Image (cartoon, rainbow, N blue to C red; front, side):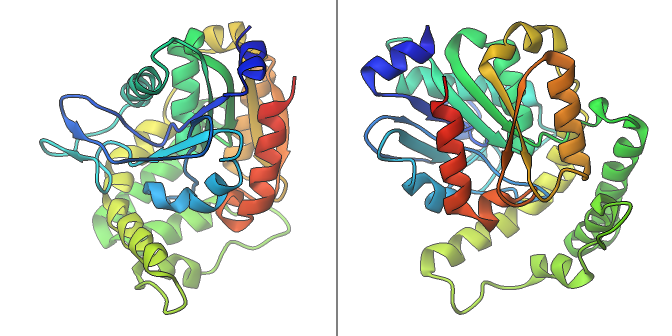
Length: 304
């Protein structure tokens, strides 16, 4: 019924699971644009992204949806009133529903997109609030519980967090890159890619892009210490997701189907009977190929 209502009104909603909304402990920063109602999520490996990272894809969706992008609790401009503690997908899901309610006070359901850690929040939102969502697109949620070897996945992310605690962000990113490399064929990204996280914005970036880079880099300690393990360790409510499988599409990257997040994502789809959609690029296709990714997302959201 939600899909039909959205078509008739031509006001589909796209709300981001990488974000937060009004609550006692958060001062949220939210950006909206477009002719309908909506927003979107953030990529992985660790890109604890502020709202600005999604400007390119948002622009390609804004003719049909209003796209709301905003910083998740504890990140950038959505500062917590007290110290940051380990985060919970359930708490972030509650934030999302408060946002939906603020943007859609008439109760119309929203379409929800999330990539990577945001996709984990999208799953939690669908399990907890199925009546508020018309469609959920969860792109490569790295839920290790659905891997063939869950303990290996938990050990990897625990090692990344330990590398961060011991040696900092660059060491953690190098551990992540090595752990997510395919077992055969391709090599792991080199240490120079991990070192990018220690660099300053590049001269060719616009002022807005440079500001987004600085915020994203500043978010990494929170992500690595308080988000990485709790989110990857999230155990989805398979019964609830199976009941809402008609509203769930699991996304996988064309170039990353052998990697941990995509393997977990396809395992989820099989367990709950959800559809699978292939997207351009790899796990961070959202930032690698924003125009092609937006076009694919548009097709998935608009499909019957």
